[in-house]
Image (tube, rainbow, N blue to C red; front, top):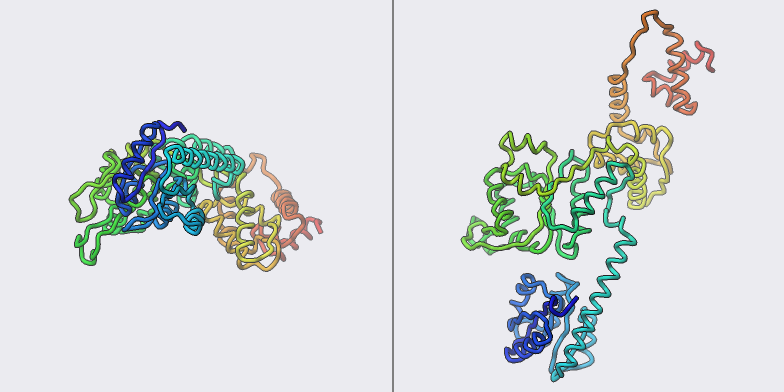
Length: 457
């Protein structure tokens, strides 16, 4: 990073000292911002996003150590150098413990100051490079619970990687339970805003009034109960990423206010008259057919165009069949650890049911099924009996509906056909008569009668 591209915030309650520091640094090519009020420095920090802050230790409103803590809580990537005319070993140690990059005692020479700054910035660069290297080594961890190897899944991850490093607005679509929020989090983790805040709002779970006050904030007296002014999420997450889940469930009047934020980067608090600027990357989602939502008047067309700079379609689980075993084992390990149980695997009949079931609730349903099986099971292997009964019933109904047999013109032997089906059921069930009977939708006694009938016992 060159000095010309480096911004330094100077916070010192002595205006002359602050200005002299600014002159020294500007002469060396640094871009500087000066603030003499420590409380105001917090807002300046959020707005300017400096690479380094030089902070005086002794200030009347908020001392340097307290300001240092605030900086490191919200922006740990910003280097901080503390200045003081009351240098002690104790204060230096305390400052370093709280995250200060260095400590400089007044009076100091310009050369000493510049050396400290170069050292702090070099350390930050090395720390950032190491962090990026760790991310590359552990890159898969950034995808969280997005697990899979299917073509549809790998195509999704390639799209996530491609758009994450841009600041484009993203609209994620897909059926309920496919993992739209997980995709949004993956985009955030791999984005340039990954060190800023990420916030999730479920638009469908809030009333219009509550949604507006949560996102835009409100002024004191704006409504009954508004006894103080409150910042909204668009202010709090400024510089970060906001995920609006199920955005198509909002009212048209709310969508008009959201459109203003998208187009102008500004909004009004509820009951307010002053426009407030914000810089937030928006990621939105919907489980609806968006073209139909526009046609039905549920979604403003102009908002749709502005939110969908990039669209990401999350495939349903039935289109990712080869991912089901990976996901099932991922959840098996997760909940076995969470519940303190040693459940290591799935029985063959459980694996067959996992692969064959249609999963209308997608990954969320799969996760819930595995969680329930681990919690309520007794052995170290999950069996099909520990899955909800409706899974087997639904599977059988789907198979029967899709079964299409045509009687040949010259007829066939019903006994031979039944014998073949019984043999196939036994093969699939590895000889287990109870499972084979279940596959055929008959009782074990009925199966045994057929086995005797066809000499299969």
